[in-house]
Image 1 (cartoon, rainbow, N blue to C red):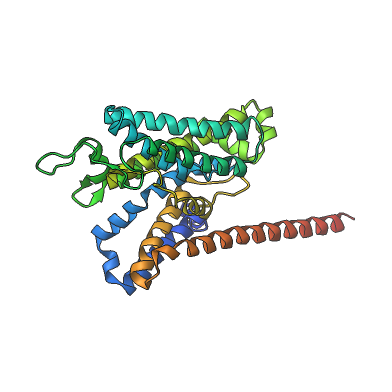
Image 2 (cartoon, one colour):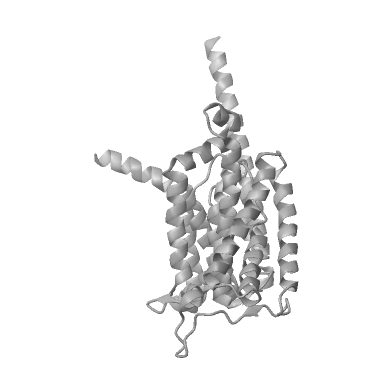
Length: 351
């Protein structure tokens, strides 16, 4: 029994998720040693809260990339969601919760449109989502011009604050804190991690997603409608982007068409760093969640500990993404070459 436990522990220590956890711990140690203010809980939670939208969207993009696709339009849907909420509330006079439902429906439709072209028309996911990125950003900007409020100012003044300064209703999604410390966005994020984990790793739907990513033809032969599965992953990502847009709008108390416009690189980096193969068939919600936190802590720690400008934070993200992809390509080639060598030796022995 002790031997089995040690074997199980050894297997866990070799997982990529454990490596990410160690990287996260190393970040706290290094940044905390350089600047003790980094470890202040209030500022730490606030910093994670600033990047929570990246963490949320990354969870859902994991589904897309496991099927062998990619989604770079999600950040544009964040801005579209935000401006739909703002215009429908400010100019159309709809109830704020009706506005939220409308924004989620719009985001899901955007995901469905892109998913349809990828799954049913066999258009390359990169091409479709790149076009969708420009299209949805343009639509968001167009909608913002229909508002009585100038686009550059943003639409603010959402309901949800009493005369005593207590946040309720919509604003509660952006300002409430558990124990006056832990932001509600962080709690929602952990809830979404659990939901996505169950959906991907503990459900029939998740197994179908993996099978489609491993081999689409084999999945079809086993009775799986791969087209619907692929399309559904883009719809999920649209909904995830909508959730991020809602929380971001509530947090900044302003609806803008360009919210989330800089998220794309960090989202893709988080998913790839989390262990999801760009070719599909392999991925992990826990890995993506840990990788997202690694990136959030890095984006918070580099400026306050090493004086890195916030404008240059995409540089380490880009380097990290290239190194990961190159490292995996080299590793897979080494495995293939070692496998072919072993096969050759076996052939020689048989003769």
